[in-house]
Amino acid sequence: MRRDLLDTMSDLSENARRVLEARYLARDQAGRAVESYEDLCRRVAGAVAAAEEEFGGETDRVEEAFHRLLISREFLPNSPTLMNAGTPCGQLAACFVLPIDDSMDGIFEAVKRMAVIHQFGGGTGFSFTVIRPRGDLVGGQPGIAAGPVAFLGVFDAATAAVKQGGRRRGANMGVLRVDHPDVLEFVRAKTD
Image 1 (tube, one colour):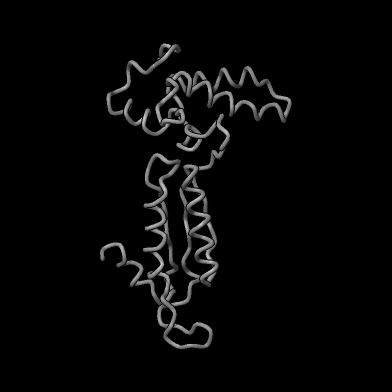
Image 2: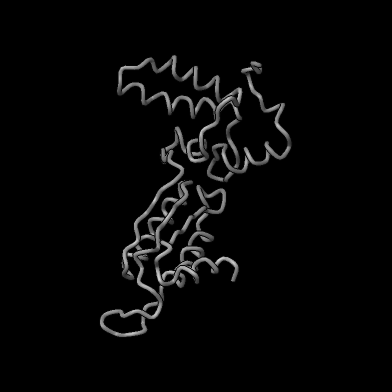
């Protein structure tokens, strides 16, 4: 069923309108929403269709087709695309998998990269498997290593401090191989 293509805000629930305004509509310097749902659809469709120029595609036709899908809500892209397409940021990817090295520099470089990705609306995933187990040698000193679980709180605190796209709490996924010596501590970490 085809919906009215002028502006479908009228059939959104009050909650959907609140989420749309809080997370997706462009804002002015004071943080006020400065676009309608129609404007958002035009902004996103125009930015996505602009890629057609590189390949000699029909930009106008693609923009109109994509706009029609957005305005009717037959298709909605991920949150970063809705927030960032057609803005100076331009970051459209939703998920990033970041490496972590088994060193203080490597761990905190991953935290820094995570914060920047969250700042522009992306979520992050990590494998903590390369981090040596708790109590292992560090620089030849026994019993010094904190282990991967000790650093989960660091990643969580940084995530809480930097909202995704400035609009919502960031999202992370951490994994640890089943053969890592700290795997049971890792599995229980979320319940502690």
